[in-house]
Length: 368
Image 1 (cartoon, rainbow, N blue to C red):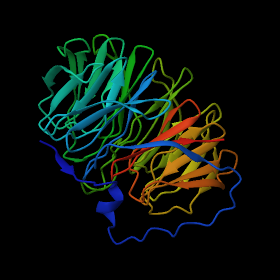
Image 2: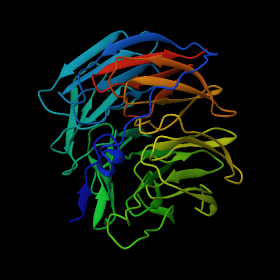
Image 3: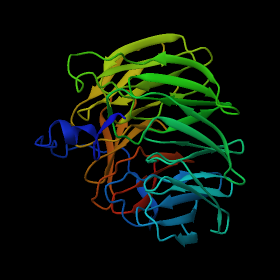
Image 4: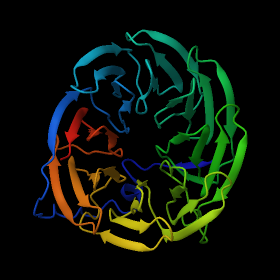
């Protein structure tokens, strides 16, 4: 069995716990984001929780075993269920179905009125939120297995498994479902595309290859979800590379040496990455050429970037959401939440961002 390197909020905690976060940088704000609504769901403890968003509702959960559905436009509570169990990862949502995972590796599916519809087992730790699409629920476990369950009754449809290197990072890396395919990055720097319907492997590619002499030096895990559209699929590895591939066949388009555990985002022009020290970087989509780097958030445990209209948003360890210019990475706005860390990548819906803090605050932020 592979040994897991516990990472807390990010690998930085394990690599250099004495590192001091950069002070909050002064900015000259040119945009003024505002909190459209907020809610509370309960604390995350040492886990990372993120909201699940579907067409009309938002699902949020807490480590204490509480799951809630909120109206997407107003944040009004629609229903709440207290399970008496401990949850380990963020909520998944699709249609009327809400999905959460327990510490014991159980997957619970709740219906549109908060009733428990089904329960099944992954038999391993699940830290990433489930993804719901085309009548299936796809769940990733920390031992590099992917399960697909029937969204109606929880019955297993298929499972995909791969071997882990001797040392891996305990991460919340999830999967992305796009146009009938499941994309997932794994320990050892591998990116895999699977058929959503049956779990068959479409292609496998190397984002990064292990280097160095010690097991720690050779860790090149992909610890965040990839980003994908019709043009390309991109992923980034810790102590490895940022790499983009052709989504149908997996041919390498370009790659750049880079280390990240937080993750990335993509728009029509650029790929944005938060590196392992908290720097946010932008690269051209066509060639991977470096466009800009914002390095004034070092060691602030910065989340993966999220595209917010013409801005880029990241959260940090003090609950701030920072807004950067897409053109040059300069700070253009900032908003505070409840002072506790934002660990997951901000989610996006309509003209708003959604963040969930470690204290359990859920904030819908409207961006002009």
